[in-house]
Image (cartoon, rainbow, N blue to C red; front, side, top):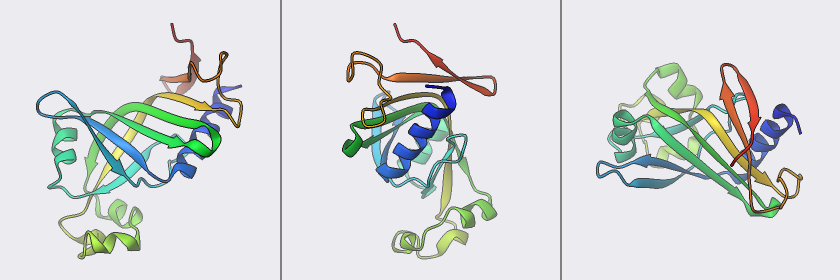
Length: 160
């Protein structure tokens, strides 16, 4: 499969999953995973999250931008793991764009309130498997397809 086909499989798997884990590094150096409801990935697989600026995850992202996202969609025997960088975004227009009405229970002041910001994730590496869509190298289930962004292009890379 081409990188474009594989990225489309990754994108549709991410959309189907609805939730993912955002994994960052804690102060003590351990991985810290949180279940999140991301917005659908952008065409380049950029992912946005609504968060409180007072949350632990915001502090961790500000200390170390390297994070991992992990999605699972068991109906297709599929998962997508993305490695990349994250940054906190406070732009009001973006906060209004990335808002769900269901968020009001967490942020009653809405997207213009001081307690709502975004985390923007930019992937540099994608590991995926989707048995239903035949995106899994032989032997199936033992290795993932791996893509890396090099410059502006995504390339399929071989794992050792």
